[in-house]
Length: 330
Image 1 (cartoon, helix red, strand yellow):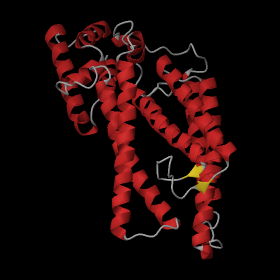
Image 2 (tube, helix red, strand yellow):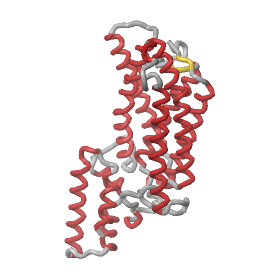
Image 3 (cartoon, one colour):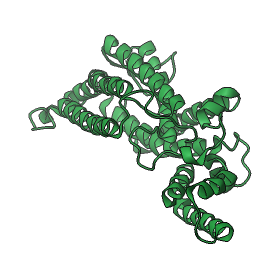
Image 4 (cartoon, one colour):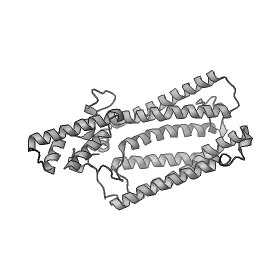
């Protein structure tokens, strides 16, 4: 009984801002307990708990009710959209600033600190603006997709408290992470397509004048685009199913490993060559002189460890077949 309550509270918490999550979850947990005590005098059955939770409604709508009026998208998707945007606003601008500063330091163009700072800030704002536009566009499409929206939100068959996923189910798709991956993946694919068009790496997004372009191997750049597109399809498929299965996860792991190799040839090696050309004395320094290879090895090791760990948990939990898990309301 208490487990069912915790599963419901956990699902609601996934769509709440992190700063307010603990307080709202405690309030919701207390509210449910009070209703159960008032109705069933402290001895409710699982069916009684399910009835109360069903009256409270789908976890997304419950989470949205704590946020007041929202007009960008409907209450089913608004909490997820805002979490995706918040995550992107934390990650995208700093990455854009870091890459811009590194490119300026390794490039041939000279400029004072103020100019560099202003250009980095402008690049960060541009990246954040593009990312925000992509996220809003994705959620607008989901919002106006009719039956597809119901399938994604899990409301196509109505909310069933007894079908709530377990709190730590390894096969469960974190819908926030999945949609964030789709949004960030779309942003990354657009950048890669631009690099393919201009013939290499650059931070000046202007087809007429791309500025200083660092050449990269075109086959590996095309491979990265293909890998990213395939992984987005996998994420969308898992999102619609509500879970991962072993074959899909194995394919995703393999793509992660090949993607790490492609990133080595497209990003780390070209940047390192430019860096070593500017500071040749670092070539003989242990680890630093083999920086790209070290990064590649660490990336593959982390990918394999995380992937195999989740794979073992999925198999031991009984998710070795596509039909082994069904999410009616996630």
